[in-house]
Length: 184
Image (cartoon, rainbow, N blue to C red; front, side):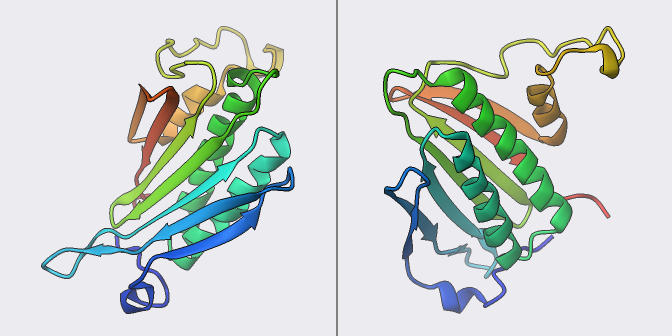
């Protein structure tokens, strides 16, 4: 499957920086990286974009809007866009609700690499060290109607993902999820 920016590769030859405003009022950098082209002319890493947000739950909307807009421009299938939004929403919500201490400010970085064979989403935060994939998946013992809310998001991410990884690097949690395009 080939995800190419709708304007063509030559249009994106340089580095572009844009500034969006964080809901908390401060500027947040969004960096677009131009595609890297192999000797055969194939786009090895079709596009990477980054967004830094604060820890207000309302900041998640900025991530959803960025994914929808940037992935649409790159002709990513709508089903994969929705999967990416679901995964990012779950992971960022978990960071905000469970990984951030109230006594200090935190930054959450979201990076997405669009490749011919799918997407890689990386969520990085400076919160409490936590590997969301270390715990075993819960076994639903009761019907969904009888269960309390919560605890099913990470299993959902695992189900959507071709690969899930966690690392603690330079005092930051890094969660990486690889998504593949839907099969026709």
